[in-house]
Image 1 (cartoon, rainbow, N blue to C red):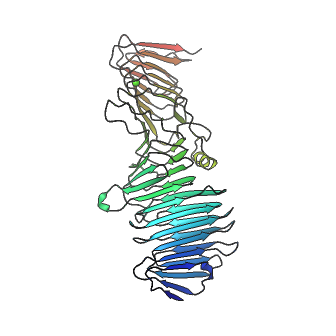
Image 2 (image 1 turned 90 degrees about the vertical axis):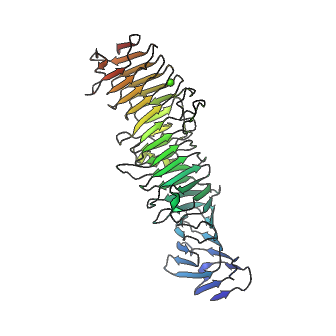
Image 3 (image 1 turned 30 degrees about the vertical axis):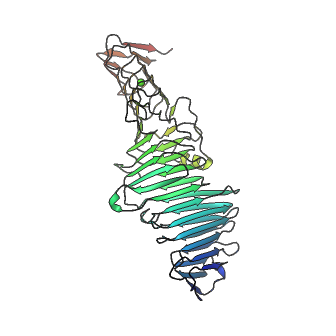
Length: 479
Ligand SMILES: [Ca+2]
C-alpha cells in the first residue's frame, strides 16, 4: 500500500503495526512537517523485535512474522511500544538524521522486560523516551563505535508507576576518542576532548532511573561526578590495563556507586582551590553514598590543603577509608551484588571501600588545621602530607603495606606498631613532636634515626626525618 500526502503537513497514524500485512509506504510532502504515530504491540503472550530508522520501521514477531513500514519525509515520529508479561521485547532506534524528532513511549506490565537500544543520533535531532507502567526497562546507548554516532540530547523519563525499574547502560567500550564525562543531578554530558573531532556533545537527562552503568574504553576518559542523583546508583566499569590513562573525580554522591578497573587517578572531593585564601572542602563532605572501588589507581584526597583548610579526620582499616563518624547511604540489593562480586563488604557505611591487593594506593594531603589519620589494619599503601598544625597519625596492624607521612610544622603525634615500613618526617620545626612505638614481644631498638623492628615483617622499620632534640620517641609495651 502506498499513501502519499500532498498536504503541507500530514499526520499518519498506525493504530497497530501488527495489522499491516503487506509493505506499507508513507510519503509525506517535501516541506517535511509530517508526523507518524505508530503503535507497536507484540502478539498476545509473546515478544517482538522492532527496528526504527529514518525511513523504515520493521516489527518481527516471536513466530518469525515480519511487519514492514516505509516512510519518506516524516521527521516527527512517535513510537508507542507495548510489552507483555514474562517476555523480553526489544526496540532498536538506529541513528535518526538531522532534525528528526523522536518520541518513544513504552508501556510495560508487571513482569515485562523492554530493551531500548539507542544506537546514535545526529546533532540537530532529539530523542525522548517516556517509560510508563510496571516492568523493567533497559536503555542501551552506544553502538560498535561507542558514542561516536551519539551527538544529540536524549531524555529518559521514567515514572513512579509501581513496579517500574529503569536501567540506563552506556556502552562506550569501542569509542576511539578521548572523552570528558560530566555527571550532574539528573543527567550526564559526554564530550570529545579533541576539538578536531568536531563532534557535538551527547547529553542525557533522566528521571526515575534507578541504575546507570557505563562501560568505558581504554582511551583517556576524564570523568567527574559533580552531583549525584537521589535514587540513582552508578556502576562504572573501566578495562584493566597496564598503563591506565583514565581518571575519575567524585565530588558528590547521594547513593552508592561502584567503580572497577584501572585508573590513573581516583579523586574524592572537589578540586582544591588555587588560592591560599580559600579553605577548600574536606574530601568526604559531599559523599552521601558509599563509593566502592576495585582496581589499580592512585586514590587522592587533596581537596583542602591550603593554610585555611578545615580540620580533616580520617579513619582507615583493611577495606574502608572514611571521614571520622561519616555514615553514607548503603547500597541497594542490586548494587550490593555488584560490590560483593568484587570482594568488598556490602553492609559497611563507609565513604570509600577499597579492594586491597590489586594495585590501589592512597595519597592524602591536608592543610593548616590539626588533622588526624587513624589507621588500624590498613591494607593499601598510604602517602600523607598533613600540612601545618598539630596533626595526629596512627598506624597499627598494617598488612605490610608501606606508609610515608609528612607531619609538617606543628606539635604532631605519631603512634605506630605491628607494621611494615613507615617513613615519617616530623617537620622542620621547634615544636615538640611525640612518637610512640608499640610492641608486645621484641622491643625495638633505636639506631641513629631508625627504629626497628616495629612489626614482624622483613621491612618493619620506622625511619624518622627532622628528629630534633625536643622531639620524643617512646617505646611502649602493650599490656
Ligand atoms: Ca595539618
